[in-house]
Image 1 (cartoon, rainbow, N blue to C red):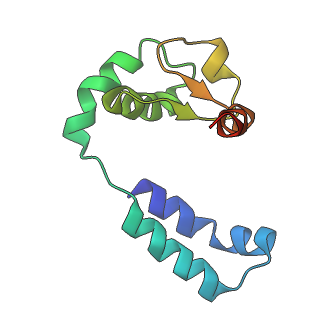
Image 2: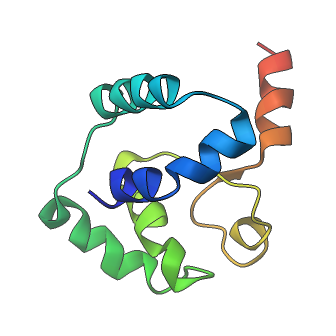
Length: 103
């Protein structure tokens, strides 16, 4: 899976920036793998075709497609999500912190 490959690929960088030990990284990685649900490509493909039409960046299409499929928003600090498309709600970290205050 791409996410897990990327996470593993940047293990050394994560360890360096977080000042954690490899054992902690591995434990966290195991928790992530248990908690993340992988969506099969065939289920998301119809949404990918739709989101290609309005995705501000081709690399973001899959995230928007998943959000559309789940009828959800996306968490991103990338301003393009808010400025260049309006079909999928985009929440910045600041937005989410503000929402949390109002709970």
